Image (cartoon, rainbow, N blue to C red; front, top):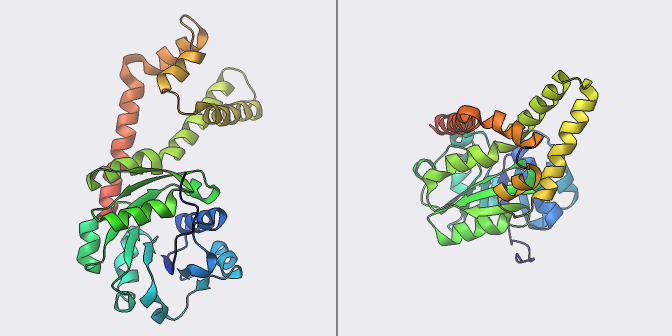
Length: 269
């Protein structure tokens, strides 16, 4: 079981947009970080930041307080990170670790713009807000990698990547993957409607099926899970064969992930 002791701060969250807010909510829900150890830097008022302030977090304090920070979490848009970090750098202490949750921005690029602080990259999903996320972790520095895992292991299924070059693929599969499942569910509902169901019934059935499948999956092999439902010669098997005909399912998903990988790299550049 993961260590239940909070990660000691001070910890600085730079940016409190959709992903930053999800991370913040997950930390407080799981008690990964004590609210009193949090420093939140955000250019606009955010509900998650205000809720954390009510529990003792500091929001937009004088930058001098950054001198004692142990972790700086960069949760801003990739195009903005240089402008955001430049005024913060003179206040950071030697002990700080830079943790980036920005898609596409590599550790060498960060090091070029920031300097010699240890860097860990983490790509979490917004499910961390409920303690049900996924997070990929990479760092060349052992201490930074351990901090990255400690900050997300209570709120996410966490995997270590052997090479930073794999981060874009991990982001395309996990970071973007929930949207793919939602798109599939929407398409399934519309297919049910085309087969004669009314739109409301088709939506309920498709959504409930996605939830049921996720809750039933466990850690069993995926082909075994398919086999429990798809009997030889049955209707489910017929549907699967139509889905996979001429390799179109595999080709579609290869194209989907490749497009997301390309866009991650474009954003980083």
